[in-house]
Amino acid sequence: MATWPIMFLGLCFILSCQKQPDLSPQLAPQQSQITALQKRCDSLAAALTKANNTVLNLSAEILSLTNSQSSQKLSIDSIKSEIAGILTSIASLNTQVTQENTQLTNLTAQLATTNANVAAIDAQITTIDSQISTLNNQYSALLTQLNSILSQLSIPTTLTNGLIAYFPFTGNTQDASGNGNNGVLNGATLTTDRFGNANSAYNFINTGFGTLGDQIYIPYNSSFNVNNLSISLWVNPSTINTGGAMINRYEGGYANSNSQAWQFLLVNNNPYAVLDAASTTNSQNVDSLSTHSIIPMNTWTHLVFTFNGSTLLIYTNGNLTASLNQTFVLNTNSTSGISIGQSRQANGNWDNFNGDLDEIRVYNRVLTQTEITYLATH
Picture 1 (spheres, rainbow, N blue to C red):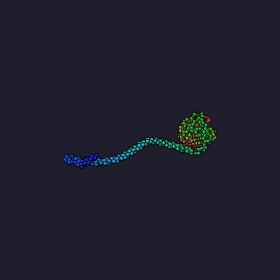
Picture 2 (cartoon, rainbow, N blue to C red):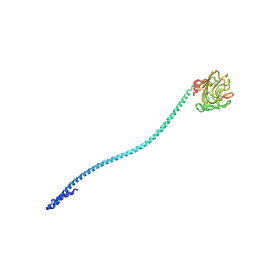
Picture 3 (cartoon, one colour):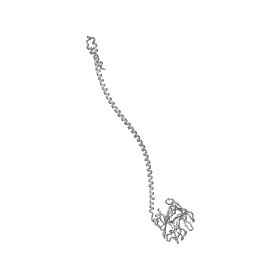
Picture 4 (cartoon, rainbow, N blue to C red):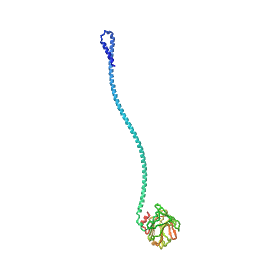
């Protein structure tokens, strides 16, 4: 680009050095033009130099810009790399967030299941609390029964002393005293006792006077001929007409007979207990009516009568309700047996009892108050 001004100057230099004819007049206008051209060339050269410097400066700036651009490109590449790393990290974080969300969803489901389980456990706890309350009540009831059993286990040992016959009526009429005075059953049927135990008491029905009806008969035994006597029994009457023989040894049927000895009856529509006792010469009776000790219907009541040769006593539910002082000797010549539920006599069977009887004991001695209280409460 800067070559042609130099060539032009060189040409001018060559032309000025050649020996020429004086052509000054002719050349003056051209000289003036050449001078103008020279100035113009100089001006162009200066402009060219300036332009060249400008080009050089521009080239330096371009180079600087290029270097700067390269540096910036490197920075941008670095930034891009960092952005790519950040994007990768963001993607990783997004993956982790997704996993955390999945875990959170699973945990939410597990929490719901756990809450349901807790609710079920709470319901079970409520049920268990109710069961515990029921068990506590059952425990209290069992404890009461245990105490009752323990008190029964602590039965006075004296209750076996002088025991002639004992009929617990646990499914049969056998004598549990060990003396073999077993009862012969006629008509009476097993029923529940005062505790609700099945087949543990006997029910008697009035089948009519004069004929053998519901009755348990214990054949004669010489051990029956005693002057001191106690009878203990539980009675649950259903109806009473004129009288009901619970237990008796009165086969003669009339006073002063060699067969009669004693009988224990319930009499009248609102029954009370009557004890008739006989010797070979006379008879006496004592009843609980004098103390208004009425025996309730359809309810278990404990009765005891005793005779010690001079005093006849009747106890109701452990309490003394009648007494009579009379000295005489019970008929010890009798050959009669013992009948339960009906009065067996020489001219027939009378005084039928209606209701239930249980736990009959016959002693050849007088029971103490402690023994009577025990039998009345067990």
